[in-house]
Length: 134
Image (cartoon, rainbow, N blue to C red; front, side, top):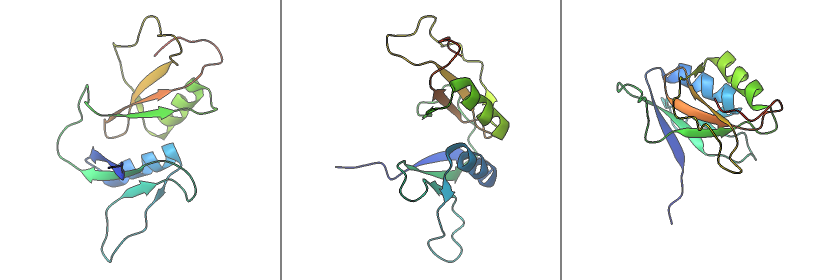
């Protein structure tokens, strides 16, 4: 059976993207595998779960409605606090017209953001002050 080894993100500036995602996720850069290995691959710190993320240099533009995107969990942090932390790292808010007007039962609120390269991702979590979306 196959399993996910890593997720590759298309980016124009792999160093900028690597800095953002390392700070956003608390990941560390994988050591070079051979002399001259410049490939930026981020991994969870030793002993922590999670999939590796590779910065794949690409000239194609980010998609407004990507077929594949990352979903992040704010964990114990309030969703709005986590969103503000990510925006402070270089993410930007996306004007997402598909937020549900009424959440499905058990669905947590989420916010759609774009990384510094324009790749869309979602952050879900709990809000202390309410349950609105977006």
